[in-house]
Length: 461
Ligand code: HEM
Image (cartoon, rainbow, N blue to C red; front, side):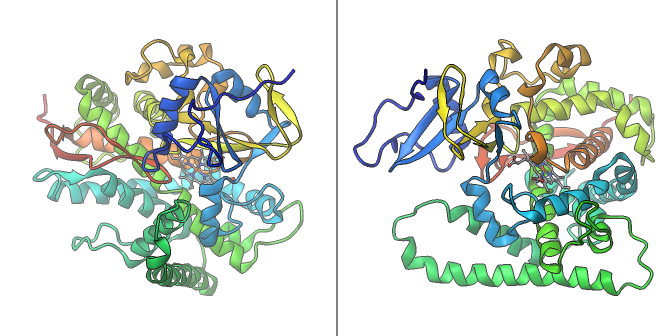
């Protein structure tokens, strides 16, 4: 017995369910729409079905790897002009995915994290030097600052490459500027804008130049490493250049290595940066939570001006970790993921999916499912106390996606975020700009728009 998937009430002839879309905030709009229509709904637009799922039970089924797999949805497919069959945007049947996955997995083990730790610590210290000079005197753009930090961390730890983000003249690196423009261009390509054709020529030429520039830089980084006679790096680039896939015995080709480097720079920086920005927002807004986090870091590094944080200590920062977990619950910076049916199937009590039909799992909504309790909008890190985590089903918390294609960089992200947040809490009190109300901006990721902060050194007790 099948039954129709609910849809918005007002269908327009031919065009279908075009009313009530919000292209500037699609995920937040979808969250609102789920509140009206329940845990699953569908828009049919000129015959194309867009299905959204958010309820805990339906998500459990859709995460079943035997019945569903990752779908490269439109926003991801658009990125393929930049990163093609890189890990994040590869279709399920592309051979380079498993090759690259097998080759790169050793770059994300606990031992690998131990190797990146020093670099992450030193990079955060450079941010602190910068903040001591600027952020104590003026309000700084938090997402922009965090973006510098995480781009620098993945660049240095992953590829031994620095973007010089913390140079005092602070001009944006041309690589970063070109990459961000190309990303925004790829996202815009999805949005039908009237008369776009009139302006397309100039934008297209700029985009071609941007892509040529960023691929040129990456190719240079790769060539320099290849030419390095005493290469002692232990990083992602080293794995890609010198190891082979145990299954096929093959190495990655030149073009695919470039796609992976760009993939890591793209997938590995904005999500973590925005999560850190949200975390700082919540700490600035909740002084009692910030005080608990500070008590934890102070107990590890009492009175130290420049704590020499060890790798093992980061795992001991249980409260700071809960702040990160709860931040990613309320504002999962990757707001959801796409799944497609492996074969004809139904979910729930009869919602039908034909082979290759897809749905977008709105993690933003899943993280507000009734299983989280009545006060889902409240920021409460203690939801992630072990006893509470054990009491919840595992599939209701999915900030890093699910299954085979879940985030390969999860441990990298958690280590860098906990470390950076701990050092910032240890050093500063946070003062949000007066009157700031949280506005969440959506590009591929979610971010606290125009969130600015001033910091000061706390007075010792
Ligand atoms: C995949 C989230 C940080 C690299 C994913 C996916 C999600 C996600 C939801 C699955 C996407 C899908 O199913 O279509 C996040 C969040 C992060 C984060 C919220 C930070 C808070 C990172 C970092 C790296 C990274 C730091 C690299 C060092 C990747 C890659 C994939 C991926 C390469 C594709 C994996 C594959 O399909 O094989 N991420 N990510 N991410 N992420 Fe992350």
